[in-house]
Length: 82
Figure 1 (tube, helix red, strand yellow):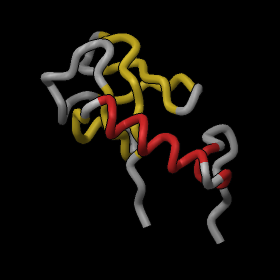
Figure 2 (cartoon, helix red, strand yellow; figure 1 turned 90 degrees about the vertical axis):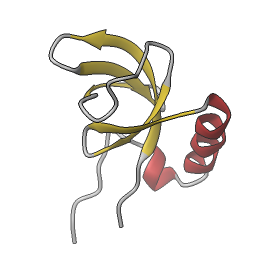
Figure 3 (cartoon, rainbow, N blue to C red; figure 1 turned 90 degrees about the horizontal axis):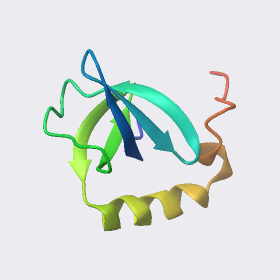
């Protein structure tokens, strides 16, 4: 199963990259698929790519749902494949 996580864009970088905050963790992602993205926008992130710009309410509601599942919310410790 694949899951896209909402993230807030903190900075836009050269090379179609952005620094984002995902549940308090800073990551660098590609914004090749979302060229319209601006600092402060929320995006859905999947496999290191921003795949869609979403509104803040949707992003915050989704983040609250993700936090209810600790195995999803801890981005520092990715589970090992079975």
